[in-house]
Length: 400
Image 1: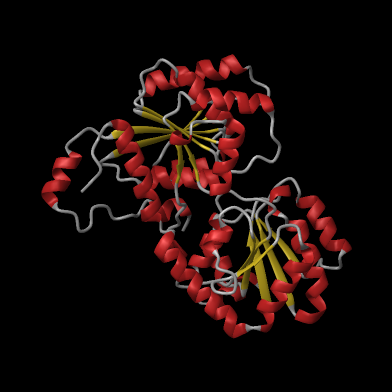
Image 2: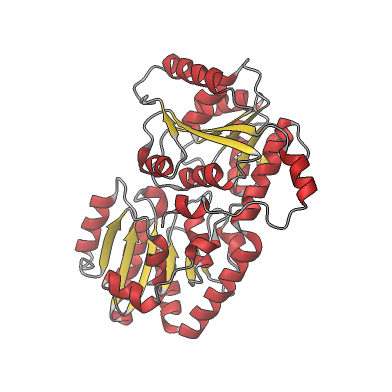
């Protein structure tokens, strides 16, 4: 079962007062358009899928549009009954005015109350296209830290930040970046908490069955990430090469795909890890993969929203993570996981080895990690934050 399928099965309205519910839902739904470039399997895209399928359809009419192609997650959404509009434009080669004109025509056709854009190009073109159309709200989400500061982008973000109702971020570090470089008014910055659907991590398959299906045994660690520089997977491979002799029968599962895959495969071979490291590519059965692991590792150099880390913790897995983004807030070092500095292969190797040598501690970290996610990072909490934001912009009162 995919993320989209799981979220679309939510049961709305449990426990609500029927009179208050009827009064609140008697109004026309708030129309929200979510805008992306495309929808590959990634953090920002999965969040949009959750918003499209998870918000109460009696109160919110959520549509999703892509400047480019719909992508695999967009196709998944469409198959689940949530059509994704695709303009089929190439943001790198298509003229800027053409993109803005097409988006403006789309906005005039759909007449959303709120435009919610994600990542740089949709934030730029979507907000420009919406000027003067009388929308009730514009929300732009910045999902990641700035790797390189480009002055022209900062200037555009600064100007557009003043015609946006809110710029949403999911970590204090990203918020500091936005304030420092884009210089938007601090009153327009909103820090929200990410959330995951815990029910989707529950599987009928046992640990032994999951391992049998994957053909793994011994000590198994894994990660889920797009294979790009940000994710620090070269550091993970170096760390594993330094501890493999001490861990015996060690298997590393790397789930995801991306431009660095050939380089990482070559690195694994050079380090003598060809038999130990398995590159599984993009998978939509992540809960099954997590069930087979002894340890989850997030070696990122920088992060905005560590959703895969939350999913691993929500599945009860012990975790080792670099201290990036919100990981330092989510993980209490030595209590519900282990933290290491980014880019430090020695520290990462030592943490993995410590987890390997302490099975009882691993179990305790996993149990405490799940409690952390249940208490602070549930899907319902995240959806509630967005619902309140949309209600405010649409001029409707929060639900009792």
